[in-house]
Image (cartoon, rainbow, N blue to C red; front, side):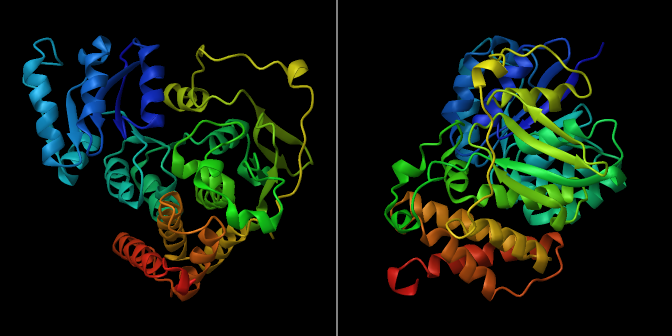
Length: 398
């Protein structure tokens, strides 16, 4: 059996590293042939040095800039037993597009951060490549464009986010016409029970203490504000072609039920599992086959109790902002996403407070006049929103 050839965009991030771990365990089914990373060469060099199996399969490496690419090339030249003879690292957007559209690539794992991920995602889909999607911004900023591109090319988008992957699994063998609603579960983050008046004094260190998941800093803060769940609502709207009014959010502190689907007959199918991202990653990579996973098995008797509660929209207004962006349509979701991304950066840098994050996003979203969501308008709106948030970053402007 010919292994599935995989290119990983965002190879040194959390999802990228876990994707490599999954691929390493299935050498007969998965061959990582391409790696793309950011401006730090050291993690790529370390990954290649510590992964003999990867050095036998990788054909292309792409870095975000020339300096990083040259550092990787120096390491490749010095390492005598490095990947295939003549392999060199390239740099830039065109090299990234070449990587994800190469004839020998079957599946692209998209774990690159930011709306810029739209460009390689669209390129991969147009080339007929399946995309295992972990980058929220792709569907949040350009959901309609992305899904239409995939349909025209006959390519599949396989969700990697645990919530969307859970819904995807629950929908296997079902008709979408029988779906009544989708239910996304949220842990509630570290401030689920924190009084509203105390949220203004929350520190970045406190916000980064997620109760159940181990994630990157930005996603962890988004979980604390519930913006993460708002972004997932937008993703689900496009990924499953379900109106926003039929997508609900419930807070589930145990993070055992990863999401649910309610059907027309009142039945609810739920996906349960341990909090390990390798499960949805592996499902997307091996789909439609299931394989053994090196994760701790879930014991329902040890879990004991599963609880659910409605989200507190007064204390966490970010969730309603996402629904508002969906209602406004066009480039509004791209503005929501970009404004939130910069606001989170400012919070983590200590320049604004925790409660200022949704406040800034709301201000910028209100000032935006949505345009048609084509690629040029999406990227322009993304840039405008980032500039607008930075102009609000002084305390006097809030």
